[in-house]
Figure 1: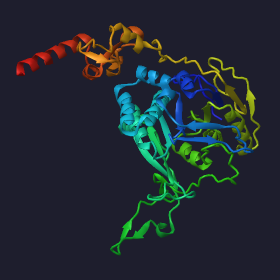
Figure 2 (figure 1 turned 120 degrees about the horizontal axis):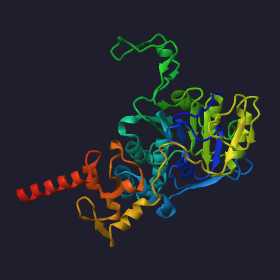
Figure 3 (figure 1 turned 180 degrees about the vertical axis):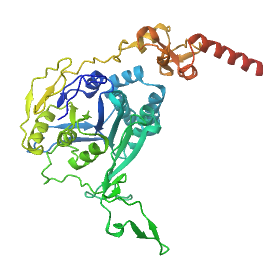
Figure 4 (figure 1 turned 90 degrees about the horizontal axis):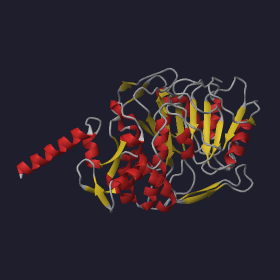
Length: 436
């Protein structure tokens, strides 16, 4: 197993770490740009309560996939503190079109996706597993965070089984949204065997002629529709009883496509550890996060069953500066109930509630004046702005942060100082007066 080294973009955790905690707290403590691949299979906003069956290895595990704004008050406050205007308005817009439950669900997801984007290396990838309940809303959110040009694929995992609804086609597929961190993100092309009709690289056309196919001796370039991986059935040897468990073959395909041996794989909704097990089998390093303590027991059991003759033990979590890797042959798994503490140069230095602090400094009342245009605005109309833009050397510190209304913030962007912004606004105001 390749080692994690203490260098630029170095993780502040040990390989094979399982955190038992709220994943937002853990993600917030992970160093920036230290993860190669993240796969997440979060709740889907299905409005269901999931329980592992009694007698299964995961018995006792459960979660409620139901969402209300009252249940995400803290996340909503945090989102208003850190989100850019596009993220904030995407979440609000989802509430207007799909109701409070969808807004609450995206409120939960947005800060976690923002943190996942931050911890990925510039060459990293993220795969978000969902279903048609919220896939289109999640894609809008991901476009805001990763940039629309970094969207790589909407993967359709199709399968059979279960009932058939009346008045509609059977819904027999999940969606996996694949995003790259940047245009430099690598990808390992995977291939599937050619069918009998085109083994020679040729096939008949409707007009009776032939058309040359792109032929490769190892198989055809895999498409984004995956119908060859079957969902787990109750008698499958992989089955643990964990609600929403996914097949190892699915995770192995994702990990093989978007990582290489020795890379770091992160699953923030680890559950029964499928991504962690697949990463271990493929000689990747991995870390997982889950809020359910049952996750540790099930993952350890699967490591023993699925990963050959190795004996995995739970070790004491004692990471040391400069010694974050495990030696070859060290098969310890580290269970930690304390979130990591960031050690990277990019760690935030702002106050936790700086947005609220700046709001109170603007005066009193439901609407308060914007420091740019001086027009009274509501709290939700303001963005948190860097007075000196980060691109021009400005720091992410309290004394370089202010509130600006969204309109002024769009104008100011990375281009203007506050003096230049006010001059521009004054010029536009005089032009409007002259035209009228």
